[in-house]
Image (cartoon, rainbow, N blue to C red; front, top):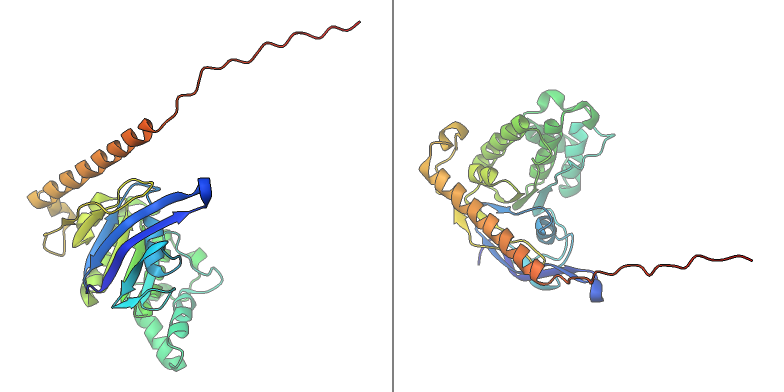
Length: 284
């Protein structure tokens, strides 16, 4: 049994004629300590997939298991970093992280909570800003707080739902390096959602495309056999990187084109109707 498993998972929204099948027959196995990236176009159901693993929503059929236990709701064994930071604006960095620590480790002393919080704020290199509030931080710094908060609860699985997509290119590149550094320290099991092939190749052990919906499912996996840490400048000259980048991009484009053909085949051509002329009214 794999550490994280999704077995025949499907999810729809709506009822009757308004029902839309978002995900269909999702089967995924992730080993402990593995870093995988799920890539896909916008609107394919990537966030729905993360929410199913987190236990925020439930599948119509199939099941999700973490370390052998069926997921029946949110839990501290899964930490999640959202795209939009999700910080409490009236709390400092210390208290945003500390609040999560208090909630999970209810029996800890104040002293232990304080030292643990400071340790994880330090891991994301935010110790100098520990008493600042989110409004005083840049976007990249806010996302570091989100990462620190998720890590501080000692989850078995880290879920990253496009956490870098709202950042500028330089900040995004910097945080990619930070995520790699933190992951190499303790090798958490990580499932990251992204729409960037390059980001997946920089971070992941495996990249798995999510096909275009409705009824999106997982495509073929691509193993990234490139030694870590991965220097971005050197990757441009790495033949394996170039091969994988071309193959994944080609697959995504072809899968999207195939879905467009299927959609166009189901389109109805409406008749060319013209409004009936109305006779002018005459008044006596």
